[in-house]
Image (tube, rainbow, N blue to C red):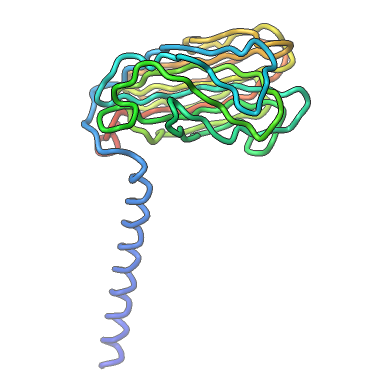
Length: 256
């Protein structure tokens, strides 16, 4: 009898321990995001951009005096970035916004490559180091070489700092991502074998040539309902894509 009771107690304690472990993992995941009020929808503004115009001295490239848009309590700054080297396999190691480190959410290639598209973000709302800042220098530090680079700066209000989903494609003509209800998608593209092209089914916020055979496109897409969106590239060569879909702040507590 006693051994049976002990076994049952052991099973209960093991289940309780697993529950506590699960709660701890969840707490770690959401510790990256500051508590913030729920928002009825996300507001996204393309506030500034940068085009190096071709290869520039590296390994650190600085985009001077870039606008972050108006100050707001729940403001985040999201950066759509595309870059290229002349035949060298490199990596973008760090991005700072006004000296504040940003964090990378997704990139098209996870290994060193001669070209890549990426999306980074930094908090810039109440209580953050950038809370009262409207214009900054943005620095991109690579692991060497002389890069060419384009960037679109987005001011995002009312979004979770943790994407609902991210997507990447190394060499393709399209990328698909599911946008949450009242959410938004940000998409970054680099095409290195063409000098022209466009991205359909989204709003192009930046589309420009950056030196020889480097086309950068940065785009966004708002959605009032949950939907899957496929952005298609019309250029003659394949492209590298990086994308995130943002949910509303605290929307994990709702059915959106």
